[in-house]
Every structure is written in structure tokens, then in C-alpha cells.
Amino acid sequence: MPVAAQAQNISQSAQSGAYSITLKVLSAESFTGSDSEMARDGGAEPNAINGPEHPNHHLVAFVREKGEPMENAAVSISYREVSPIKGDWTSLPVARMHVAGKGLKTTHYGNNVKLGPGHYEVRVTVNASKPAVFQFTLSR
Image (cartoon, rainbow, N blue to C red):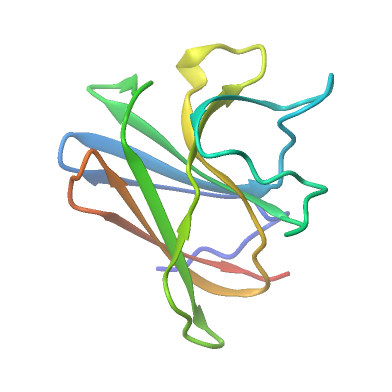
């Protein structure tokens, strides 16, 4: 069942094999400067808030195994708009990051992305497991 965005914040959880995955859709977050919200630990380069794509959301997955955050998982994320127009799957360049100043216990995976209003489907795969599938609606 789709979840409507309120203040562009969405949080949904699913289980895929041994992994508990929480997908979050938040406002785009910074990775650079003294006010940075995220610290990159590896993976793809972050999409900068003021970059050419002008991302407006932070699409990320928190992955846990046996209740503990996974600090070195192989995570892939793909997404597509399914309404009002059904689009093709887009692979998100996945950065591994943690909340600045909070340490590796806050490790998560994803990137900033530009999403418009609509209904979306997201697939998150961890260590080649069966993908967890999420659906949500952004109202603005």
C-alpha cells in the first residue's frame, strides 16, 4: 500500500532473507562543508545538493542483520515512477554513508536524487539477496 509523503519524509521497512531493510525518502542532504549532514564512507560519489541534477530527495536504505547495522554490505537500489507515467528502472549510484558525527552505527546506503510528484516503486538488493520492493507516493 502506498504511503503519502508528509514534508517529503517516508519510512518503510521490509525483510529480505536475513536482512531487515528500512527505506527512507527524506529531503536532500549535504555531504560537504562544515554543516554537512552525511559523511561518505565509500561507494559512489554523492549527488551534491547544488549539483547539475538539483536533487530534492535523499533516497536511502538502512540495512540490519540480526539487529545490527551492516557497515559493508553490497547494496543496489533502483527506482521508477509508476504513476502518472510508468517509467523505466533507474539505477541509483549508491554511496555508503553515516550521519556526520554519529559514527558507523548509523551506516546507510543511497544518494540524493531528483523526484517529482508521483507514485514510485523502489527495489533494494543486499548482497545479491532477493530484492525488497517498496512503493510510495510523493505529493509535491
